[in-house]
Structure formats: C-alpha cells, structure tokens
Image (cartoon, rainbow, N blue to C red):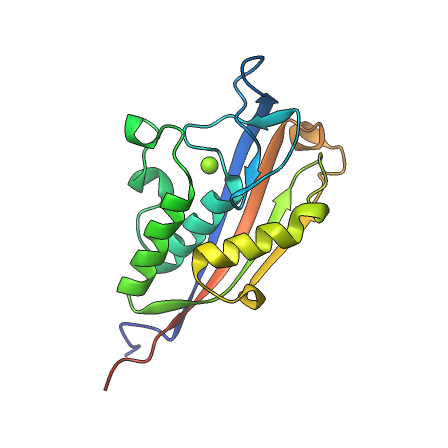
Length: 174
Ligand code: MG
C-alpha cells in the first residue's frame, strides 16, 4: 500500500483578472505581479489587490496539498479581504505547506500579458516571489508571454497566470 504521505506532490494554479483603466477613470487597481508594481495605464479588477501571479502560486500550493482553494479560504464576498495584500494569501498557503510536512521544491509560472512586457520586471518579480516563499531564487522560475494579439488577453484586456509547484516531503524527525 502506498505511503499516506508521498515524497512529493505537484500542484497547478491558474488565475485571470480583467484589466481596466486605473481608478478613478475605471475600476482597475494598480498593476501588481508577484508583489511588484508595474507601471501601466490599466490594472486588474478584483476584490483583493488583484495580484494574479500570487493568486496562481497560492492555488498551486493549496492544490498540491489537496486543501481548499484560494476562493474558499479568502472569499471575495468577505469585506475582510477587500484590497488585501495577496502576500497574506500566499503566506497562509506556505504555512499550510509547512504544517503538512512539505517544503517547496520549485515553482514555474507563466504570465500572459499582452502589454506591458514582463521581461524588464522578471528578475524583480522572481526575487520577490522567492522572498515571499522563503526559498532561494533558484527555486523560482518565471516566464512572460503575450497572447499573440488573439482574443481578449491579446487585446490587452486581461492578465492570466499559470503556475506549477513541486512540494517535497521534509525528512520526518527520527
Ligand atoms: Mg485572482
């Protein structure tokens, strides 16, 4: 019979936010990815700060653990999470990971954003994400892609993120 706690677990997270003109012109909040502010005339519409990268990584970790997802833990119907810093959500997922006896092997994320280009911000985002996860930056990878001008994402009307994480079981104390 397989062990109750496998040596590693994989998790996938996806998040998408509509982009609108920044307030007060529209409902967009400042564009933040991985906790890093990116100057743009549009920003995400969302209940929290709309950080799609942190949301996707949070859901990937929770998914790997087989635990409730970000929307269940931090419902957008709760005023408590209005404009919340998404680092709070990620910290909860990291705490749950540690409590379950796992550590982060690595995370690989893809940001789909037509404009502006992610590349100039990639290192800053990667380093900040590693800091929030409490791991060396070598365990965090980030890719930026456009949507080839196809559909709403390609028209610059949204930002989407895919994230995959590998969690590794920590050695049980003997
Ligand atoms: Mg989200």
